Length: 221
Ligand SMILES: N[C@@H](CCC(=O)N[C@@H](CS)C(=O)NCC(=O)O)C(=O)O
Image 1 (tube, helix red, strand yellow):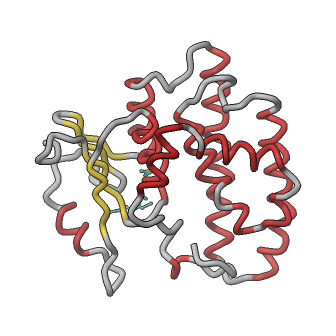
Image 2 (cartoon, rainbow, N blue to C red):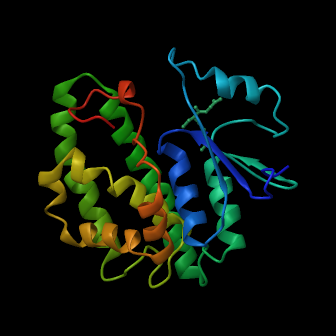
């Protein structure tokens, strides 16, 4: 199955979450895809998705999923790595692939901590986390060094994962993010990739980071 118009389908909630790096990767390589966005609905239960889920011909139905003819995948990392192989975004040398793998794992660890914090209602933990965040950003900054992209000079799939983490920080902790002008430049660099810039300009509406009632921080994600 593909969409009726023959396009591959990316299914995910109507927020950024685990779906956004996949959307950005496909935009970057110029693939026209059906961006199927599920709503959680008024009751927040997501019954629209749950009804489809029970009927889906995918080994482990979940969101995000990716369908292109007989390729039917869930698991965001599997989808990203499949697309990265297909579109040469998986690194060319051993060193590039190692840099990609390290960042992929590291950014997941940092992201997991960040999500726990923004879902917590304990303000003290949040204050402590802002200091930790500065350390995390510092390690990323040093890892990147003078490289324009994670692997070195070439864009890879993990750039869309790192971007997805960093893009939250100017809103979450602007005073911390200001200490890292190179990371702010990196955000701009990803947003200036021609197809990504075009995608961002033409989105009908920017997607929220997460649904707002998932989060207790000052900002609506
Ligand atoms: N390990 C999975 C996690 C997927 C997951 O937890 N998806 C969440 C949204 S981030 C969801 O709501 N899935 C729908 C479901 O469980 O039916 C992945 O990386 O894709």
